[in-house]
Image 1 (cartoon, rainbow, N blue to C red):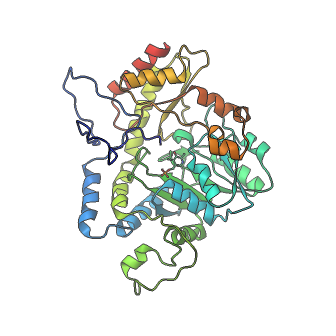
Image 2: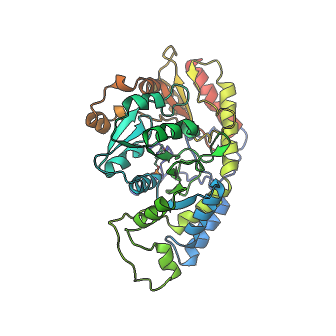
Image 3: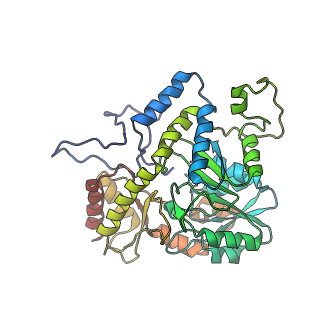
Length: 415
Ligand SMILES: *Cc1c(COP(=O)(O)O)cnc(C)c1O
């Protein structure tokens, strides 16, 4: 998907040079040929490697004390007495959250069309239907006025997406949900840390808020996710369904509370638990989350300054009291620009710069288009954005020189 530095698959030829990306960028000798700039790059340092290695040496690899520690530290970081449930992806987390909210056949759930397909797929897993909504021209987050127009009495939940790390206006989302008696499940895959009205995303009164630790995301465990909730019933149901519907999870069995064989099955659950190897990496990454955000923000601000005057729309900064996680830097070329989206991406690729597109809207993807009989004009803002959308490289280890190289390449095409 959108992580553009694919690891070598098992049957592909061995690359000539192996690069290990550590948190500190490797100094290049002056005059060396410029290396490629990936769209995203994980910030894995020696501390993460040591933490994962310690788990590998410990003899306990799956969900256990590290997963519990990660959950406790994540909940404490969010504040407000939330519980955190670690899972093996945000997709799993969204699925469990929607299941715990009671979403099922006959229900509908409102989802912005400008998102990754997993936001909507989990609703179909549960036999419920998706009601797509358009996004806002400036924030690229869900347009609640459009959601209002598309609302039906069958709508039971809404999944706002904090697009690119820029938080939705949570006061407005929660008011909309209260007015229509909807559950709120935040897709916070891009939003760690992000703030709205001086409150961290993850601490608001939604029913659940789900983070992703996929390799390209603001913090990573390779694959992983976290559900955060104020509702102990949602947390308890997610824990049961995370581990096959057993009435006690792997951690209790690890602790040998009673005999490890003595469990009951209370539902046909899933297999969504996070390994301790991944959780150990997560504990270190969480402790660096704000430092990593600050590094991305620095690069983003340099982009904003140096791209000024070009025929593009840059991503919005957070309003006062807010914090953009700056997960990515999605620009949109004006229709009047000299080149189009594909030309720009090709020109950047020719210079070793990895650009991408986030996202082709769901209503333009075969499955969603056919299921809901969508026309491109149905979600005009998202479609217009997609026509000019290019995501420029942004990651914590990005140097000023790398930002400047990307800017120069963009200026060469559009300036
Ligand atoms: C990455 C992503 C997901 C899925 O996260 P995984 O951890 O890969 O399952 C869901 N929603 C959005 C918006 C994402 O970017």
